Length: 411
Image (cartoon, rainbow, N blue to C red; front, side):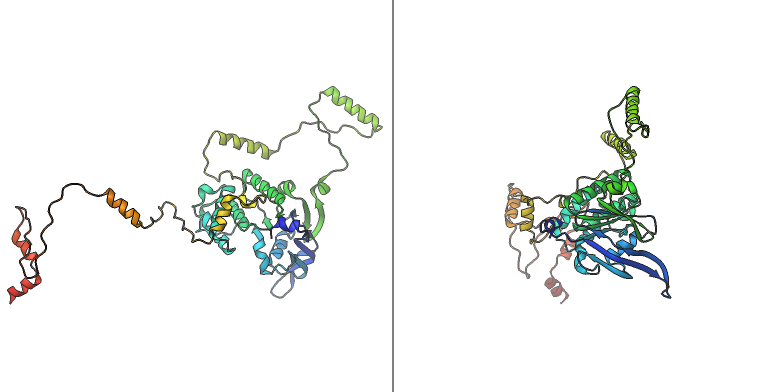
């Protein structure tokens, strides 16, 4: 059952719920070395983008590993989809992008995605379709046959993100997803997170880049020392109640002075216009505008290309189209092996009809010489052979002697 179907069915239980969760790392003598998570109680609701914020050592990555079942809690409770994280049945519903991309360097991008898709037991047709869509989405179609060891860090993060989405997960956990990405890739990842959130997926985002988190999350917690220091939506945490911002078209100095005088008179001189400035675009917007202009001028680049649209299987649910219906009906047929890059596919054996056509095309209508007489019996003399003037007939005749004649001469 997809996330959207569970929403319609009214299943609004928390996707992740912790109750007084604690994780203490101990040394060889079982002495407490570090308390990474301390009495953590949070709920991650269905279909929301949830942010885990905090400085280094605040317990973000440890909390994520506890959710994945990679670590066992020292005390407290943790449920994912209503079950313990060690339950194998929930693994296929989770997608995970770790802080560092651990990929097989000898595989190329296509082989990497195919490998992880096979782990989820995805059929051949669906694998091929999703791989094409994901490679286009992350902008690596042109480099899909290069070994991963030749990729830059940003390109490895892109293929890692595609790997986390190959199983169309209900819960997507992203640990520093924009690390190593250029501003174009960062913007694309943020747009993807927003779109997946609209579709109804639950996303847990951990990042040090606060501006990226601010742009995409619905709700967040701020951790320090393994404890929750603050929690709420962006509006609740970031809105400054002590000041008011009014944005208008450009005003002249006299108008601004009249507004300031009005504010002072109404407030009894306690309030005034504190600052007058022109709005400024973000550096990200300026950067993306310059890059877009360079692309319009068709300038070449050796880096990752701009990604395409979000993969079709990750977009909003749509009725089954004709081609999808055909793929589903013939999914049980034997898959045709894909050809290796640069190698032509093996030709199929010709049929009887093809043989007749070929015979008709190569039929020789030129006059033929009469057929030679039937070969003599083994006891008769060897057939006469037309010889050239420069050829020694005795040598050719000795080579063509039959075994019986040779034996008689020796006798």
